[in-house]
Image (cartoon, rainbow, N blue to C red):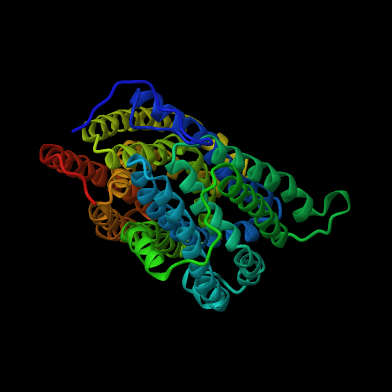
Length: 463
């Protein structure tokens, strides 16, 4: 096994060699930009929620119903990005720049195929899908107004997600974060203009929020393509050879398909939970939408570390630096434990105040606050699960991540939510989420320790 404690090796463009130097410094370097970028991405979802909430409870309930589907498409895209990032990072760790270029180009070709297929399905299934999710006749027109526009811009969601994953795989976390910040700012500025018709803009209501989202995604699309083409020179402009494309796609899909499935499981389970909660009325749906968006911001530190750790693991795995893989995983686990505890305490005492900034209705504040007092006590467990899943995918072993994801969603969360709903109403559903997160975190920790002990003793990385 090769090891090194030397300084980082200079690389082309904005890329970084993560197989040498301090692991803690690398994790900070990859994660801190992600904190900023993720905050911007999540913030424009929260901005949508905040501005739409000013239109009334019905529009707020409608946007809450779109959340599982929006997450579903985002999760599918994220799965492709994880698959591409995994193979690209390992190729970069091996020092094969030509293979990195080929994989990046072929990953984007795969995106175009996926976008065309799922765009057609999405447009044709708006009404039946959201009827299943609990949309009432009063909210369905609002849902359609938002989703018809959102689907049109799905190309600008998929390409940047995969291309930014490729950029992070070669060790550059700063540029993707900067692009996400700019996109979030664009969305934040356009939301009030298009929703309320300020400064001469048309008053479009919930449709304005969707248009603002599509325009902000176009910014990320243009910026990421510029970096890949002109700064990193990772795009091949030649007629692709089918055998090479298929070989690249198999490598990407070997990790990407299970990862996409894992990513889709989460919004699918959220969709089921949304349907369960819909029986309690519009105020409960609105409260759940507010609480989950506050939760998204609260967990940025965990999301950033789970994303930032993947390129480090991938490059070191490709370079056969297995001891560094186990060490960075240990650092990630310690971070999740400390961060989860701090956030849980903070939300317990500030939940009603935070929720009040989105909706002043007493029932919405009560239900959202209940969620934010129960679920965050399990964030440490959720963090360990996310870091483990990210690491397994990075080394090309997607099966443990898939099993753990299914365990959390369909063996623990959904069944416990049905039971909790029957026994304790909304609070029972929230308690189910907390129990599921703690148990899957424990399972992930045990499985990861066992797997890496076996892999490091074998000293043989996956192909």
